[in-house]
Image (cartoon, rainbow, N blue to C red; front, side, top):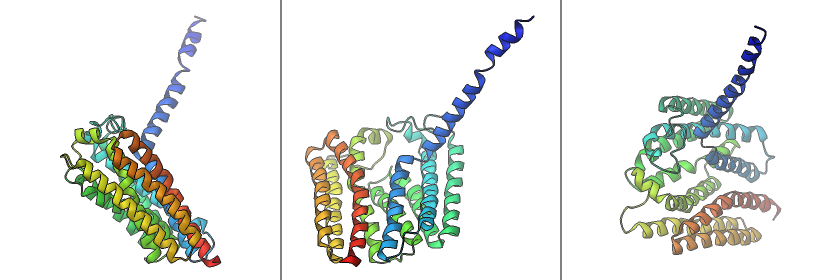
Length: 314
């Protein structure tokens, strides 16, 4: 009789760690729904847009404006990620790269993911509306609509999806720009165009690495016929060259010759990775281009900020 309580107490304690373990797994699954790796780039581009606007107006950096823009934009982007996984559950399950995602693997239902996505998107758009303004909120909802209602279904129909997706993906720095008091002017067009053009070589590297997955899931982000290699070469190289020309023109127009040199060095290096990928058409070259594109983006934004900072001193 004395030993019975000891037996019960020796069995009961493991329950608490198990609950904590399950809660931690559930948290990681919901975090994965938001696609944090994509959100990191969105945060960088939103901050860059705000910083550029403050710098171009020769105003001190407004942390509250930038923070509100980043928080609201990240919420909307997180909602887009969750909604995308809910819509593409069946196709994600067919691809090695995405089959372990929470919805595709069955750990979270598509309905719950969709509700979570709608909540985040609405919360983010409302946050932008009341903390930044209606223009920023409209831009966020426009990007969300393009991503979910146009880009996502187009992926299974035509390569035109790349153009639509690039438009949606180039919106975040504009939200930061608007939040910092910027107008829809030449500088706004430059930061939009920079991110718009950058996405093509960036995504071509991903599409080439994952081409078997995309084919298996029925995605038409690349042509299925013999023109595939030519398509990849054109879509990766021409925007990269246009990106180089854009940044050089912006720096030269600002009269910052030292910045022209810096942009030339960084831009030519990036184009070299694109050319190598176009010539070799190998997974190794695609991975190197992918890494180069991830490094290029924050460096390019930093150089744009330097150009705007350097201009008043020149």
